[in-house]
Image (cartoon, rainbow, N blue to C red; front, side, top):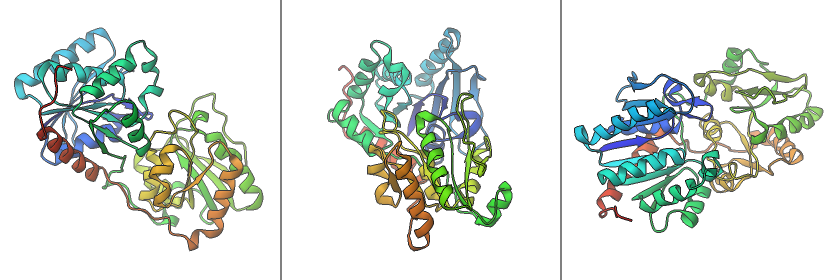
Amino acid sequence: MRILSINKRLYTNKDVLEDKYGRLYEIPLELAKLGNDVDCVTISYRKKKEGPYLLEDEGNPQWYSANLTPRSLMKLYKHTLALPERKKPDVIWAGSDVLHIAMALYFSKRFQIPLFVDFYDNYRSFGLTKIPGANYLLKAACKHAKGITVASKALQNLVENEYSGRRKILFLPNGVPRSLFRNHKKLGSRRALKIPEKAILIGTAGSLDRTRGINTLFEAFSSVAEKYCDTYLVIAGPRKPSQILPQHPRTIDLGVIGFELIPIFYSALDIGVVPNRDSDFGNYCSPMKAEEMIACNLPTVAARTKSTKLDLEHRGVILYDPENYRDLASKILYLIENTKNQNYISKTRYWDEMANELSQFLKLSKASGDIRLQE
């Protein structure tokens, strides 16, 4: 099957092509490994290398990147227009924001190619949807689409109520790369990171931002540290210059670490925390770090949002009330005192499995009837 993927290049503080990271990189890669012929076009909102990208991964799709300038977008437009002349895609899979979805809608209608829209976040919480007409385009694309994929059950409920009509929806959660994520020996991981070997380590990695509820973790740790003098808070990830970091003497800040070290980081911890807020973003996202912690068999506490309540609670993740540091502290203390008697290991979701489900969904949905192209 020939698949055209249209998604943005920069997301979750990562560059899809340079960092080879996440949903927008891994799913097209795994689709190609399944034998599909995959082309990917992507737009960067920051200045990046443009044009065709040749990546070394086995079975990698063909990538074309453009920056958000009139000249670059015209080149991208011509590149995408030429694709059907060489090899017309059987389907288009597009998401990441309203700009890329609107572009996919245009090419779907122009070349009569079935469109599948991917929601990995609540796009109406993105800045682009504040542009007049943007939300209308998003709804029009979903109405036109042959099917929709969603990264969380909360998103599925939202899409069913506001966007999909009777369109087929596939729950397609985030995963982790099978070749990278596994549980490492705790002592060896701590030695590799040069962090305390015999302490109780609580931590998180990823965006350290107050809009994601990180301050709740900082306050909760101060409370936990009063009761257990051998506890340390270990953090890693990008942060804004304005973000105030904890001043507690038992805080270890590893800065920004490479993605290849994340499994070692989580294997070194005793408890992982996934902070978030009760917001349009927090309630619908599918937290990548939660999947990464689960893959490393790490006992995990996450903020209770619509998404985590539906996706994580039944998988053994303990939930706390968002922005309630006392509740988070109590859940961390519970894990410190009861981890040995609890089983927090859940089935890992891998990207190759997600891609296989998507490939089957695209094939079956495409074959189930003609798409209505003149809506």
